[in-house]
Length: 189
Length: 175
Image 1 (cartoon, chains in turn green, red):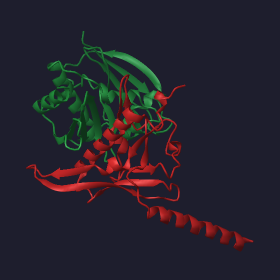
Image 2: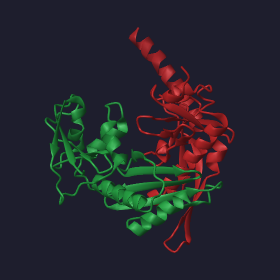
Image 3: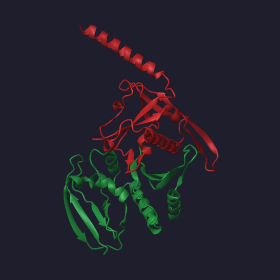
């Protein structure tokens, strides 16, 4: 049965003066716990539950609601957060309403749809935030690699392959399902 | 007494500045080993059961000139390069870094710029071994720098495969 399960947290962050928070985990039909920032709270507030009180309650499914069914890649940003992890702190500072963050979620969801519908190999990427506030996703598969830089609503890829890395690199942009399919099939080929 | 102390301090200051100046005029030789601290907190690498991958972001730099430490000035002690006990240190060879040439093409695939990558001593008072990986000419935009980051990460990964880490990150250290 498809059910949405929302976990509500509240608490005060010891290092961010942010007050009460809301933060939801959605259970997909694959029974995966997914983190969804709600009501536009910034991520700094969204991750304060890690230091606060935890409550859980069942909600009835909302068929019309837009719920990303899978973005484990970015979920880790919430669940794995600790004050010592600089990447998470910087990512949190972007804010849930940040265009780059929102597009990154959308982009990864789209990629996972491509992967799922084509039954392709999948692995969680290494997620980073660049000095220029781009969300950076890196995947390796055998001797190939794809790095994605997401800034605002633009996703740039860099393909890396082969023995001679000096000559074997290519960059471009990937937004549509067809482009993502092509990119991913290249990575795993 | 105060004047004497001031005089002594100024001599040391002069000697320090002179030392820094000497290093700044130095040249990083091709065979020099370079250290770079790779942060776990900044997700500079990925460790799986069978592989270690260095992230391109391990070499990211706001000024697009990644910093490294010269091993010979550090007396081949990478622990001085380690920024946090949670990090690791990887090595690069100056000649390999200089071997990087990045060609930037226009939208039609025609080359518009070739970047030559070099390593220059950039000593500071706090870190006389400090050096920077710099392009010539300066990057016109971020894409060629991103490709250079990939190449540096690849070189570091290959060196780990062949020679190991200069300092292993915590999860790989033997207890």
